[in-house]
Length: 183
Image (cartoon, rainbow, N blue to C red):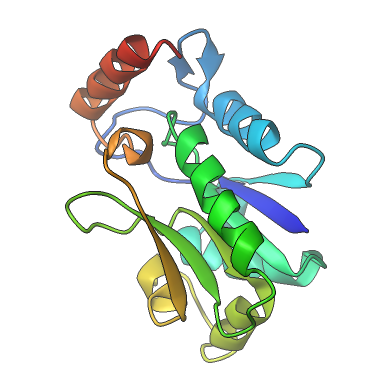
């Protein structure tokens, strides 16, 4: 089983306002993220992790690990409104490889080779192992937590479902892509 964390606590400094509550085609980005997880892994626990767990995404994930008893942790950033297709594909690969204990992470990768660590599934024991290497994760890049895990990379022909919103221009691109996709 996967316990999903929807990361909602970013500062949104380049975006200019709180992303989690921003409306995207009639629903807030946090609602859309939770719906995406439920659509691909219905019945799995989903925990929105907000600014109360400050210090960045690595600190937020590390702080939730003691509360999770599932073998796997799914992570989805709130600013990825088109991630449902990516999540579905990652889960398809995860289901065929979850019993291989050498694999610690399932990461989507766009055509340019960029891996999206905030739309992925991780083996909980691997996250705990790395988390114990440091006493304070505040301000530490997410890559430091997951970048050296043994990963299964899930390749995508199109980067649309991995599009994340950092700026108003990104938001407009996501709106346009959603309209083209009919979502």
